[in-house]
Amino acid sequence: MLSTFSKFSQICSKTSFLAPMLARNFGGVPKSEPNFLEMVGIYFEDASKYMKIPKDELELIKVPDSTLKINLRVTMDDGT
Image (tube, rainbow, N blue to C red):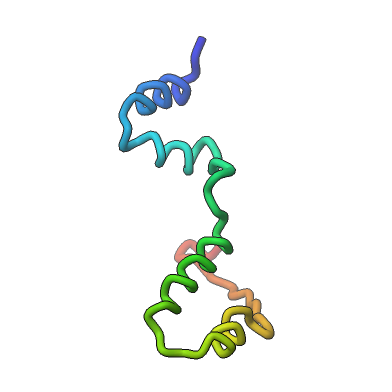
C-alpha cells in the first residue's frame, strides 16, 4: 500500500511545474544541481561581469578572511 506522500508524489510528478519543487524539498536535490556555496559563486561571477572592479580585487573579496558566528538566545512569548 502506498503512503499518502507517495501517492501525492506520483500525482504531482505528472504535473511538470510541481515536479522540480518536490524533488528539491522532499526527494533531495539532484546531483546535477550545484549546492548553496556553488550557487553563490555562480552569482558572484555573473555579477562581477557588470562591475568595474579589477579581477585581482574581485579574487580578494570572493573568499572571506574570517567569519563571525554568534548565537542569540530568543525568549518566546510562552517563556521557552
